[in-house]
Length: 429
Image (cartoon, rainbow, N blue to C red; front, side, top):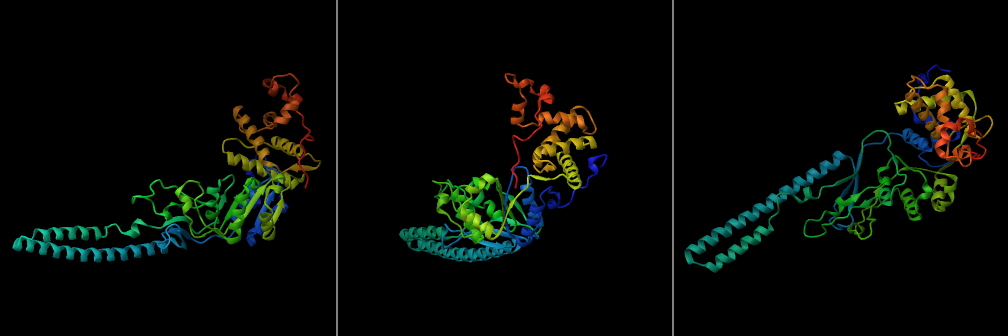
């Protein structure tokens, strides 16, 4: 064992940082290669979000593109959607503005010639015949010509394309849409309080993309997928079936509900996650789609207590220390207690827990205690003390004597802490 855990090397790829999930890692590698959907089911803290991010890392790099919303002259309430490189889109708009400027100049030039001719004619008639009536008619004609002129600010510049999604060439995006509202997930149309009088915003400028659109070409990750409403799950099913989804207003009473864009591309790899209890809340059609075009994976909550997995725990502790950036590294004696706690939390002989998020909390508490004590490294005493602070509410209840105030829990904890986890076993696969 290393004298200092900071010498443990951190693998460059996220997939190689996953601990104790060999089956899930193998599935994720295959899913990334074939661009398949993945449903990750397991206990909290077993690395589901890390596996989702790992898929994004394994996907091939994406090319540069822009998804833009354009005005639709034939149906303004249905904005056009185009997918072009940004340079090409800007070149098209520049060409359109130049063409419109030329047309505007020609139109206004002809009106100016007509206005000049009317002025000369009115002046001549007024001087020669005192024809006030004809002169008044000429003035009215000039006003009419003025109203026919085109403004210098071209229509093209006032109706510029709105960039919905811009992607630069590089790694595939990872979009975490956990707990997003339907508008944030599927896109929405902003409410425009100025709906008339010439001050209103053009419909295509009000369109806002959702997470499904921003994930185009990459990963859409949704944790606790069972918490999505049935309507949201049906929309998600439509998005993964059609690989596109129109954007429409979702706020009742808003002017945006009258706007519905053309389909916006959303070709993503869906990585959904949840607990076993979430399965009945996933609509059958969505789950069938995932099974038909991907994998369902049950993440392990324990792993064998082997030298390799203990070395993996060394690496995990070092990664947590480096990620936190404020706590010192652990001594071998402190790491030995981390192993012991990992065994206890597994609830099974010869096994280690893979619920590493909770174990990471223990690492940080022990590090904070070492900082408080002014130590350069975390030793066994700090880990032992951290076990008292990191205990769950259930363990604290078991350790608290009947009738005692909770304020006396920490000083008496070392003698009363229940180390057996049989009351809270980890479900077996």
